[in-house]
Length: 528
Image (cartoon, rainbow, N blue to C red):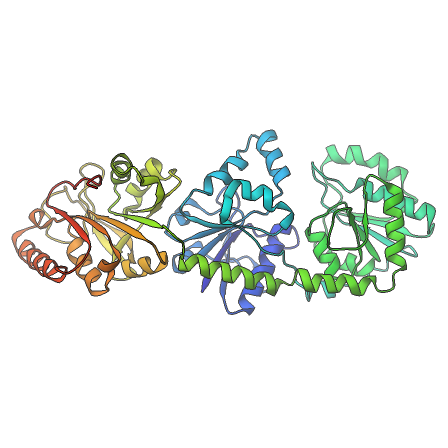
């Protein structure tokens, strides 16, 4: 199995990236060909960036993938190649809601819309605490998989010999919705009450002047308590190695919580955190102080921290569960699943007509194929936003290949064809296009209950239909709407095409597929 992950590359600079890296490396250990494509929210892609065993791939690798996993963004070109998509919900519902209001980004609505998008087969949350919130948006497509951490990496690191009889680490990201200020105050209270020679060490201090202007008076006032302060740290495991405990207000398994536990560092977390026994009300400095004292006096706290990480966050466990989910997605085993293949999508006319004539159109997974990149862009602008429609910039053929297509110049390329001898369509010049093996595409769909195929491909039917009989694909199709085009070709080609059509009609005599064959126009989808 080949899985392509889309995430912005950011070694030791981004928690989301580190999570994705942990998953990819674990998937590889389990025999999966896992790849990373770097992509930010603006669809910029960088190829060949290296981070240890990770190298960012060319997004063309998607063409040979079984499944795409979205962590940040997927460029539109690759979003619409017919591959199933699994989306990981890395954010927290409350911060996502806040961004949807404060920054005018319709994130909540976007996630909700993708739940009905046929491309999106599953959604993942790494935090069970958010299950109810995310399920309200995406329903039964949600799956909860434990968050990962690289257990081996965080056992290493260099002891930096920090000051203090006990060294208390504050290593949280400073965010709009949560800050570790109370953690610092609680650590200072511990020093006042229990150990005046202990020191606080803070990493991840914000760099923007607005926040620092508000934070600096606190730091100055607590300077006798603080041993060291640093901004963003590329190798935070050195700080874990150098300290005796971590204090954080978080209750979920954030990167800091997972990494600290993997490093064998006891964590004093928020009151509802289930991954540590040292839980404190972070509105109470005295409560935090007493929990720090308890953790530092427990001579088995380091052992218990490491054991928790091994049980809860082993990246191999995460990857294993993710692989099982991906296999289920690729097998497509669902009930009452209906498929509509629009082969020869052009400007999206067929999909729009399918919606007009078929009352249950919204219940179908619709895949519309258009090989001409220029026309595909226009088609996508027309129907690409319909939630159950996947637009695919490709032809369907006997095998995966590149083909030359004669480009039609009438009605936005309406008469384009893969074959010589066509007399209509104002053909002028050729373009290089991609073709997908139709049998492989059907296999990628997995199981379904009903299938409608429309085929209007300007002569391509004389190649495709016999291949569909040969590969037994006709037995998987309930309704076939096909326009035959031999009349649009010169005599020599027409004679050969008519022979192929007659043989095809003989071959499907016992086929249960309902056939609607025309030489002009297309039969109505509303016959039933």
